[in-house]
View (cartoon, rainbow, N blue to C red):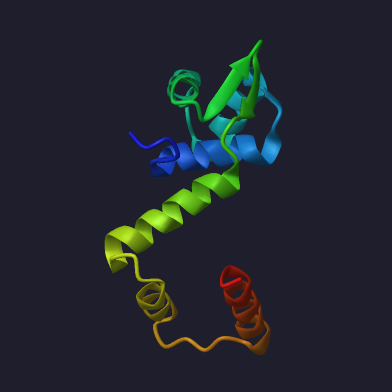
Length: 119
């Protein structure tokens, strides 16, 4: 399996860690109960699996992320563009915008990002 591939529930769980790290595993169980409705066993099962895949680390009951949130997001977004739009960023943007209008600020930001990517 790809190193940064996270299923929906795994991503939500990882977000809890990214937003709260470093976090004690006991506190993570409590947070998972409140935010995700998970039982202790579910939390520890998902934590173990993500640690085995090298995404998270649980060292002496302190949980931290090995993979950064931005790296996981980058992987997912590239996968969507490759899979659904045959790698075409213009096709993706056309579908994503779906006739919506961009604000001047958004348009300028996209222009800046594109100009930086072409250098």
